Length: 162
Image (cartoon, rainbow, N blue to C red; front, side):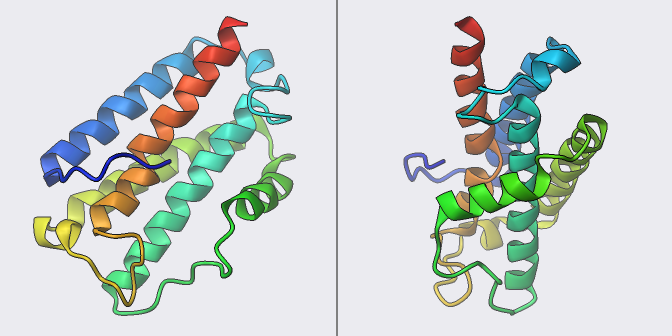
């Protein structure tokens, strides 16, 4: 989920988020419900599971950012273990109906865009060592939006070509 640490402005970040999400949405729109529910897209996961996973990370990023901006220490799970977090999220959401996952996928994206829209350039480029251990705030946002969308889109493209 990481990218080279190049700085980008808020308009550039919003553009990258929109571009990568559009690419992911276009890929998903070309698929039927049976394809979205077929295991194997990422390990045992279905595409529906990947959509739920992306939404979960968007929601965590939103909550952590809002807590940080309120002067609170974000409630990130410690010890930090992405594989454990992903496995727990999969177990919690794997039986959620497709339509519900799709609605949440779109809702959480809009919430992420709204959050970024409220952030100032200064906030996005500041490093808050005490409450945001991921470097400049914009990198945590990008890692849980545009970089994440691209990572899973590219994986899905490879899987669908098999």
